[in-house]
Amino acid sequence: MARFKKYFFSWLECGIWISGLVVLAFVNPAGETHFSLCLFKWIGLTFCPGCGLGHAVSWLFHGDIQRSLQAHPLGLLAVTVLFYRIFNLTRLNLITHKT
Image (cartoon, rainbow, N blue to C red; front, side):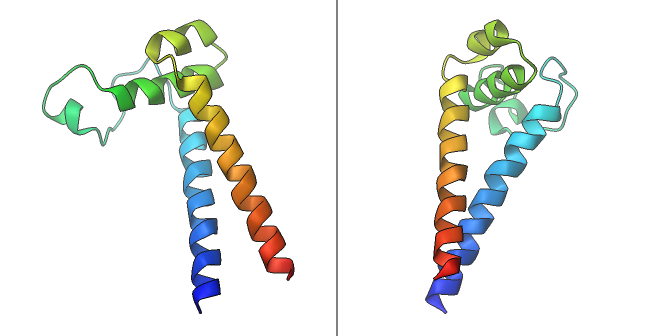
């Protein structure tokens, strides 16, 4: 049972990361009317490092590297780390499932 739990949660994590990246790829980073779960936006603050990172990833997926770097300098690193994590989770789950 513990093995199944680990396997399930690994795929769940992988799915969450992929879903988040897909959403950021399709959202308009210049738009301000999209729904946000950001607590900082809800209380009226204009600066949020998490939103800046989300905008940076979105700009990167839209091909605008300059705006991506302006939104948050670690956007490219975040995408690289997430792709690496997704790759490792997938590889680990496929290897574990074979045995």
